[in-house]
Amino acid sequence: MSVLVLQVLGLALGVLGWCMESSCTSSHSWRVGSHVDAVMTSSWFFEGLWMSCTSNSMGSVQCNKHKTVLGLPGYVQGCRALMIIALLLGLASIIVSVLGLKCTKLGSTSQEAKGKIALTGGTLFILSGLCTLSAATWYAVRIVQEFYDPFYGGTKFELGAGLYMGWGAAALAILGGAMLCSSCKMGTSGTGMPQGGYRYNYSAQGPEKTIYRTAPVSESGTLKAYV
Image (cartoon, rainbow, N blue to C red; front, side, top):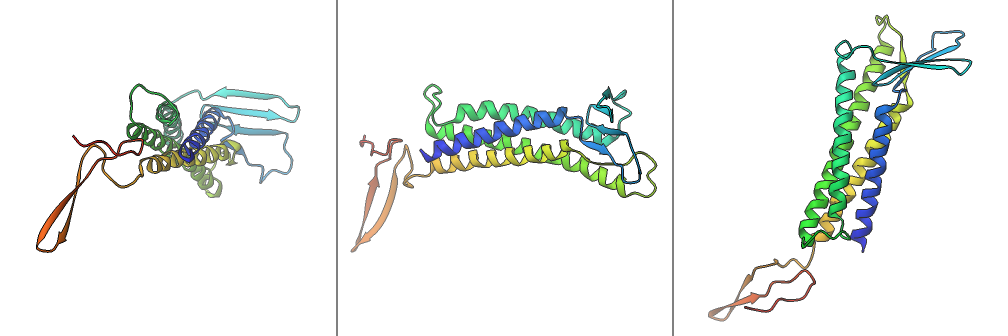
């Protein structure tokens, strides 16, 4: 029962992390314009991976798509690719993890095979979280570098809410994947006897050696009959 609870909790955290990754990818506030040198301002600038927006004190917001792809900085294109890969990995991990749940019936698949499927789903969740973490950190590092660069002549920006959402999504995805992987280890740990074979133990009793044959243990925990 504890294995099933851990699997369901890990899947729930992974799905929540994937939803946050999707919101982070489409967010327009990966960075916001800094007003550190402005005395008074009536407009705000914020940008995401796909659009740049402007708002004023009247509440009017105007967003425009980036006019070019090849003309964008390399780190923006890299972050786009990482986030798309993270979403694809997250979607695949959700499907695989559902099939690997202990309560899911998948033909005549054994519990050991389902544990491996759950392990695969957890690994994909972790990879998805690492891609998101890499994209958000890479983008944040460039913002900080440009902000403190005295020779940078463009508009200076600060960290936006989209980056914090990405870090939170990465943490949830990695945590959910780790739970799925650990549930696989818990599900496969048993009595230590091999399944589907025989184990030979040697013990010396006087001048002779006696061979004891141990019957294999089935998945239900009972000993199988000798052939």
